[in-house]
Length: 357
Image 1 (cartoon, one colour):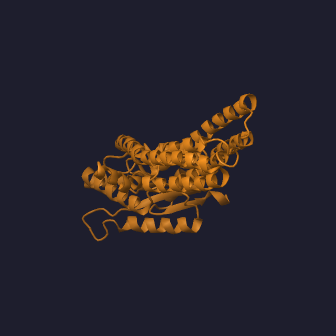
Image 2 (cartoon, rainbow, N blue to C red; image 1 turned 90 degrees about the horizontal axis):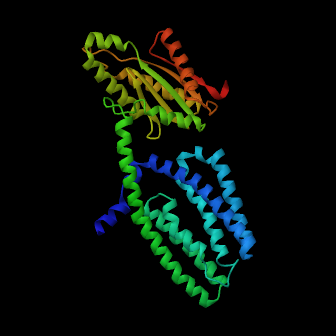
Image 3 (spheres, rainbow, N blue to C red; image 1 turned 120 degrees about the horizontal axis):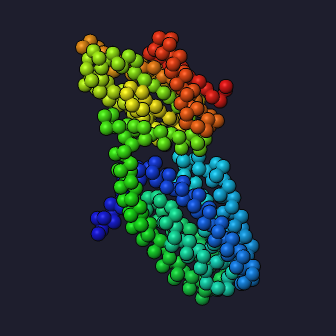
């Protein structure tokens, strides 16, 4: 049991499944905003019509905050995938602080309830390393304790502190054990997804990568779209055999995989065609240098081995500033550039900067 506890704390799953965790936290932001609006609306109506509570202004503030969160999520936040876990922390912190204020300065004559409930539920909302989440829970509880001591009588303060310690212990326990169940769920899902989305020959995405790229494009995530194919690949299969062709596909895939980041989508469409979508890679000069380097690396494959065909490739590359909203439109733009390269002699690339056209 102790060893399992330590493994949860030190697990490398958060590195291996970073993308899946970020996507789950992104979905949480949207759901959190929706549920928060509904709960705050119900609480506001109840306080106004039934309880006539002194904390009605704070409840209305929460309703306004959740509404703003929902609008920001729809317009901007869902596109900022790389910072989603941090954004979730930043969005939840004001809610906890408002709940702490409601349970201390706004209502200093009764025990606090909302803050305790939110602290216990916190691990359900944020999927993060247990140690980091536990430190966050402790920090928020410490802030509540300071406010409670300043606002309440000694008797109520001690009463709230006993409940706070229990709530923090439960929350940290959930952070340690609930997260394990969620990681196991991600592991199982990613394993099944990987088998269906990855090309068995090369190990990179097959056409299942279309879905990921399409989602990024629909969300207006700016980046670079690269369409590539191997020059005269049919000649390789016809004259050197399919085994040699398969070997060439694996080597080209390896160069593509090593040349791009884990967050970039690298896929084989089928045959000798490949696609890359690199989010946030939008600087023209950087992309231009990147393409020259990539072209050189492809030329270096099998260099000096006269018994094997030399590999050359052609690229059509579009820097998308986010104005493309459909996968097909972006693909067609890159395909047109690739056709120009093929027509002008192959073994080269064409680069279009969408932001300046």
